[in-house]
Length: 297
Image 1: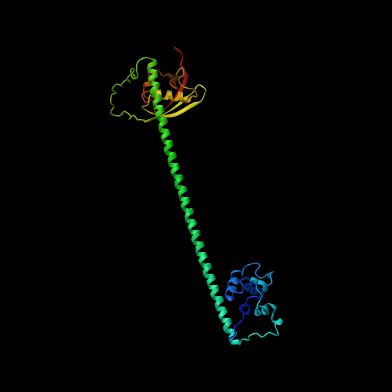
Image 2: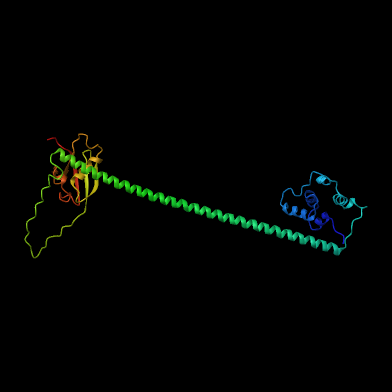
């Protein structure tokens, strides 16, 4: 059974003549399978139908064969040449084989594209997982930094409170040394015990409420005021020290300590009152004090 030429087979399979000639030339006339591979790989190229500038007969440095010469010149230029004539059954059989080859190449191409698509999907998922893990690590780092910042602030607050307590103790010691005696040498006078109240069958004594904290508002000589909450058992000296630390002046340095006055009824607190608790001085649960310069004696 006579065989069709590679060019005729490609044309029989439906490829344009110019594209088939280009595929055969660029594959070095290595056969129809190589030409078909080239056609399927470059079918979407924008210049696939542009003719080659180099004559096809000089591809790979050789002269075209008689069959190629006849295929390139066209059917009208080879009237005197004899070509093998195929019967209709042979042409159909050869076309069937070519179509099967084309279908096989198409399946191989689809399988390759499917594998590439699966690989791209795996890469996309892997990149998404890596991005999610990086985002989670960033959130954990931010939470850890926030926790460390809270611990640091709490430690600084505790240290500040400790410094205030130490300053109160030093101030008490300095005042005791300045005015004579030692700390605790001047005990506060005991509060007078109330006498017995005759019981009445119709009236019971009211229950006295105990407060743990005291809110003190201190009015400064310049018209501004300070407000702070103290414990009910803290001494009045803690209020005076708080005022000295926040009135805008440096405590010490030869300055006279401020003197605290009660608003109503008007009362000037003595140095002995500084050692007494706020609840004992009647400043609980809240009170308003006035700051005045201590008059020289």
